[in-house]
Image (cartoon, rainbow, N blue to C red):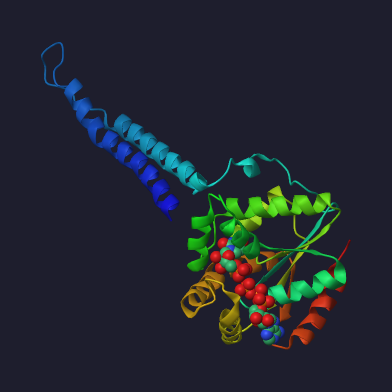
Length: 285
Ligand SMILES: Nc1ncnc2c1ncn2[C@@H]1O[C@H](COP(=O)(O)OP(=O)(O)OP(=O)(O)O)[C@@H](O)[C@H]1O
Ligand SMILES: O=c1ccn([C@@H]2O[C@H](COP(=O)(O)O)[C@@H](O)[C@H]2O)c(=O)[nH]1
């Protein structure tokens, strides 16, 4: 948030400077036309040219402010090695990534643990990676992550994608080729960046669950989880973020026919039967 307001301030300064320029420009032209060498009355300023110049200045300031905001909030983030890469770090033949999405408490982690046992996937939970980074001594992102998680907001993609990329790379070096990327992508920018710069996903496993059921599960889990966001206030915010920010990602992949939906309002065992079926039908390597 701090970062966002910083960026906003920067772009506002650009706009304000441009406005100052705009407001002073006509006056400067008037002064220069005050008198003519012949001493005759000054000519009216050429309004057409002034308008064109004003338009160009306004367009320039808008573009400048868009460029400023595009990368927000990069102040918090390590060098932007992700965006410099021209093509994905891995090809789809090298690694298989299945995104696992669903509302908070839908049972994603529980089902991923089953899949790890039976299929040898590496399970990368974006939330777990963020919590580990938050607690890592010396992390410059600790306070930022803590704030976003408590508020049920999505941590800036640069942080999460860098963590995921590192984890995939480490597992790859150890011979692992199949990944369940759990609780990610939660926002459209993450989906686009990950697929462009890390690897395109095979498909998305989407756990569909009524809010009432998820609420009960999370409040029960909160009795022992020690998670700062397993409380009624944070859960409400997480639900809101899920509907407004994460569901558009599911819809985006649905349009590409890349979503397998599993209903989660059943026992762990029954849900897993459906999950296994979905995986067996779609998995390629
Ligand atoms: N099918 C199920 N029936 C009843 N309880 C379940 C079921 N699946 C998971 N749970 C329980 O619900 C809680 C939330 O499950 P889990 O942690 O797997 O969800 P999640 O989707 O990964 O949540 P989050 O996104 O918040 O990390 C856990 O306490 C888990 O034991
Ligand atoms: O891509 C992500 C994934 C997670 N977060 C933040 O972490 C919490 C907890 O995630 P869980 O999957 O429930 O463990 C989530 O509410 C977000 O605040 C994120 O920012 N980006």
